[in-house]
Length: 405
Length: 125
Image 1 (tube, one colour):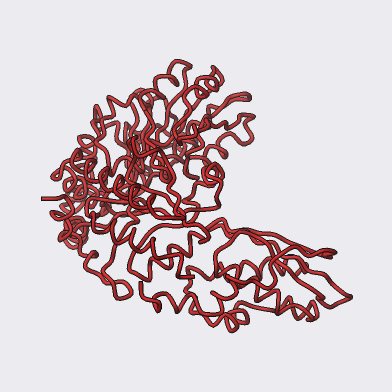
Image 2 (tube, chains in turn purple, cyan):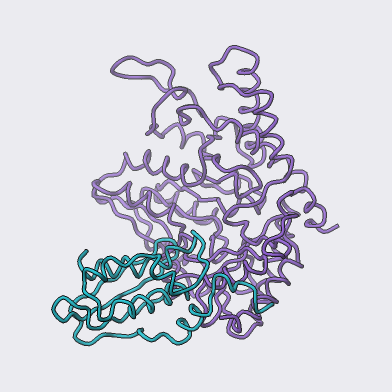
């Protein structure tokens, strides 16, 4: 059975009608829909087990703590982390990158460089601009090749002993470009730079193995991988996490506190001040269970096929431009496109009238939009429930768009 | 696709103004101009006005924007011509929406209001 046929019934929202049409949800890269098990796990937690974690010595507090820490264990297995201490639960990808930028920023000195790439989402650009500000350090960027791939030759030229951090996306949220993480991490390590990988568009779609990737930090969000909003993961190699001074304080992240100083808690709690997103952790756990049952290899294959179909069908429509690597190369579960003479927001609004949800605009990647030579694009993106029929409905509708305005 | 689909948002006025804008273009001898972007989508609108004393004698707009934003700018440019600057500054989204005759949802209201914001900047409000 096809993956979408197997899963569709598990996603209550997919039975909705939008403007009199079946909902064709092609905006999973912005946020995926949730299977019933995720929704129920969160409801059940609130109905049966809610209390604060770690410090509550009573039954509910213990249940909540067990659930929260069980989510960490599940994440550890899911991403192939060496130990549970390497898994910090955050509020999401943006939160994770900001946490790292704040902490790593403290070590930046005049002349130091943070290297990003022209592919990045604003959340992997702006926190680094803030980190270098007032420290005399600078942000530099690795350009792309004509095909929309990372220009590794220029990366080599930009890397130097001045490079302190190399921060880059695993999968581009616009072009779908898959960045060879291990290669980049290897080159960065040779100049002594720390690597930070934005895995927001990879974790929902590709099997992950932290030990094979070779980076120092890897961050992603639950809500793009069938889980709830408000929780994410920051994985750090143990030595890298240990070398990191916490930049955010509060309860839970300390062992002992005096009026003028404090002693930090052990990993991973050192980086989790305040009451964490507990119900969201229950949801994340259920989402990972769901994905593991399907098998990430199968998920990746399903979405690869959909991306290929979308590129082929859209590129065949006169006046439609498809962005990103050529169809012969692997890409993530996103396809950005534009229609001649139509603004992307008008494209999205006209498609919405047909029940089709796509993203339109700059996708929080304005430097990349400038590289594409446009102010924005439309973007179709996929998840486990997306079907070849969804893609056909989209391409049929896109083909008829130009007569609409 | 059914022709009626999306008609609520893309009214006849919006379609007409987008296809055949009447006030798009440069304005030679402009006395004031302003430009701004919509952070949601990156759209950019530039509005130019030529003043004769306290009256807006002519207005034009340029920019890269969606149909709604473009139609809003076109309608606004028409509305301010011949008006006293104080009156032009007082124009609001509701005034433009009345002319556009469109059912614009909150997510697209910025498309309507961007030209109005830019006009106020140009007129120094």
